[in-house]
Image (tube, rainbow, N blue to C red; front, side, top):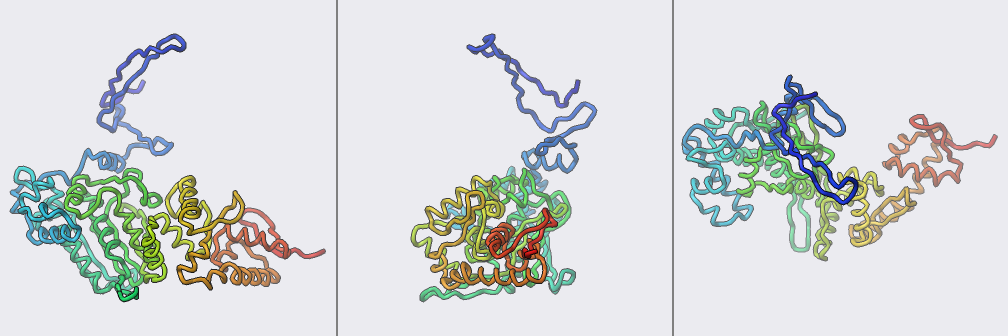
Length: 474
């Protein structure tokens, strides 16, 4: 018999039912304070379908996820004005004004504002409040792991600019954006009489990414919020792992889980961030709506890494989305992901759509069906089991790519077939080699090679050893 600590005390009740013997014994186990361990100290935790040992890092994650140990809710030991930074407070008010916070909130005195949001209690700042309006001396004393750094990278090992501080989050955000402003080229797009400018890295994406890094980092472990600016990309890292079941493969639609609940709540009340899980979708949308590559998330050791690829705006696509909005057609993040994929790969199947949208097969089928039947943006082809989708001729026309549509659907495909047949006369080809030659995915190659069966193309072998060849009469 296993005895748990803390003890679990169940209650039992009889329930009268008309079936069988007329009574069912029901046991209730009321939730306590996890985690539970055996009396000898050993413990396990359910991870998916497995029971794994409850290690120290998993225990820390459990406490963070449930809000039991919120580091940012602690109070400093000093009077709040001794820890206060007027410069940080001014940056907070500037962001609040940009985000159209209520005037009643903006016009409050510093003390009343901090009290109203819960950052000031009994004349003392919380650690969350200190991260937002604290001076560097107090931050060094109470939150020594807090820091932000910027590097302008020449290569993977060398840099031309190195700078960093432990100043409050709004100051760090301002400084990082200032460094990026000098190396964030803009593209002018002519729209009628207007000539708007679009940055390589949209301001919305950059700000949301940096604020997410600050509020989700683990302040109990060493490290810094690091922005590395390469010639062709930005990499933003912050200490701490994903928690609460979030991973790079589901971060877009996963319900919000905050490691630092108090800090997140303060930032939300000040309009610096949004708690409704809109940060990541905003990053995606601000990039995709301009025809740019989506962000890339990774978990490396005890750090989370976000990569933004440097790419210029695609004016035709941006105007296309604007035209749809003017017609009352709202295009959300899932639609943008699929449209951007089709611009680069011509076709998509349900499996790939589910993967890139981070949706289930059932969910993405509904999305694709809506885009085909209601929005009229895509059309389907193939069989029921091998269905694929492509952009409609009307969409290509709106993108001012009517000629490319015909080329993609006929001339380009015929040219690919001729090239494959000419190579097969000399040697065999694998599926991977055909994908490399054509830019198609695996399923597209399979469909293409089936079309070439009439020309004598056949497949030999199976699995990784399979290859295509031309049949020769004996």
